Image (cartoon, rainbow, N blue to C red; front, side, top):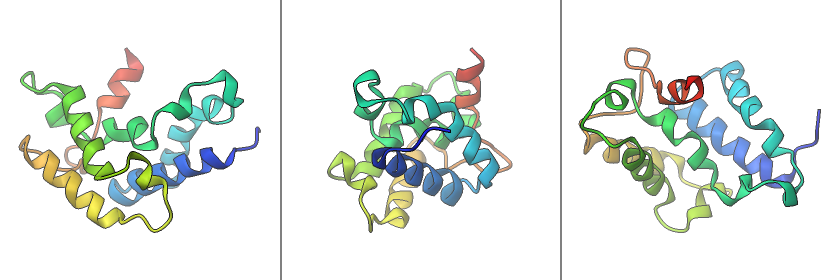
Length: 136
């Protein structure tokens, strides 16, 4: 297994916080998500554009509940961008810094989703957009 560069560890920490802390995913499911990106996380810097996007951009789709994702009147990229902006709330890279206020970020994300009449996915209304994108 390839070594994880320091930058990759930041991404994994963000994903664990969002997917585990906010959505309640277990470690196995989080690891599957990490595994989907493993080759990019461990690729030499000059061979990948992976780190040009911020960690939240890779998982924001999981924060869109299936009921919202399936609505024909919703532009999915717009919702994902609203989620990402709610997390950034300042410098884009701030969510990678130690001491970042994840509770405040979650509240901002929930407020952004409420504008669409939605909230973070639950077991009753799971996220599903990323699964659908990967199956396409």
